[in-house]
Image (cartoon, rainbow, N blue to C red; front, top):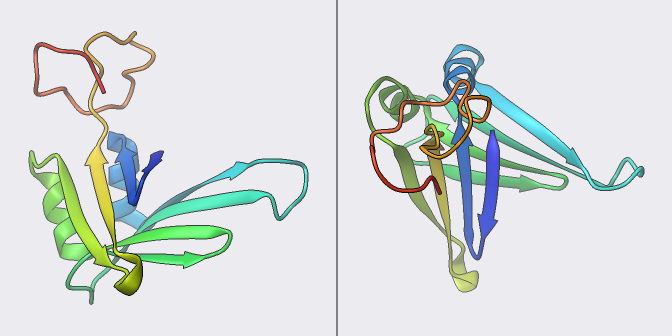
Length: 128
């Protein structure tokens, strides 16, 4: 799972096997360690929950979790839909955009870079 944070947005990109695991067990997560100290880490996860009506973000240091409605995640996973997009209201702090997308094969990448990715729907251009 790839994490991209830019401005007030969080984007997660998932490979085929990660999407399958999300639907199978209900969550996937990764951790990045920034230094030898235990508290110097960030865990990011994607979860599904059946009783949600829209995507939410949970933040409890050292973890951020994007949580999707199970029905929406299942539809996205089984369809040719690229992503799930939501905006979370942060009150006086503005909004936070959540993007969960399928990781497509890069048209200019090596076969190793494209393992387990989704087939790219485009036949021209450069991979983002």
